[in-house]
Length: 334
Image (cartoon, rainbow, N blue to C red):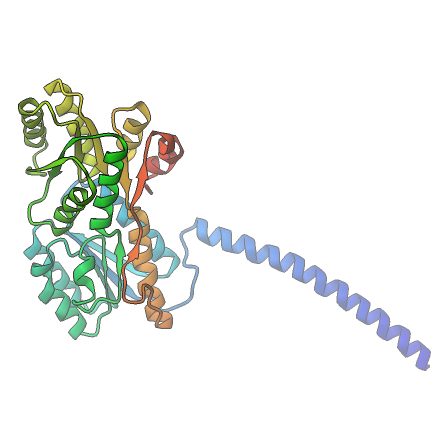
């Protein structure tokens, strides 16, 4: 009888072992398949509360750069089960009012740009007073901590400008024109000033009205016609690079056109040699990480950066990398 019980026990243990192995194998596959299906259908990857986050930027209408930021934020919001609200205005006072509106809605977190920090300071303070965590993104890295934000995500604009100056030196450039398309934007000033810090040649600034592309083109063309010694033009946004190329052609200039930021046109122009190089600050990453870090703070009280900005750039992109990045620019994530 004892021997019989022993053999029965062995048989049952063996059967159970096979059964568990089968469950582990098929169950794991089912779980992985379910995860992939959920991701494909845009379902959340977490079961945390459906918090509401608002992103308010200084974008003007039709700026493709901010489309990429928004896309990154929206995809992170899906993953993190976040109700995501996006609004923008290139007028600082209007942007501040949009922040106030988000505070009135009692959102659970705010992501905001500080292109014109003086106009945004009080609005951010009201959000913090209401107990709403704030993350700054893209612009305002120097003011972010003082304003009480958890962290800042973006590139350091001065460092990015310095990288441009170094690249111009490598290319043997002697006289550069830095085109600022939004007066009062501290980030734009920092970019051009950064170029001036490392560029061994002569740097001139040109202020233009970025909301009027024909005027932008005319202003650049006039400068290139008046000063044939300008051998490089640096634009501060991808949409302005193509305009600068047209201005160069009409002016009969041989100046190299370089730019901050990427889009499909910039990638194509790098590939065909119309542009010299671009500075990528990875806007998709800025939007994605801003939402993700707010979620981490709400869920686990996590903060990244240690009091310093979380840098997403700069990355100098040349003709050699253009083909590699074309796929990502076409789908709107670079």
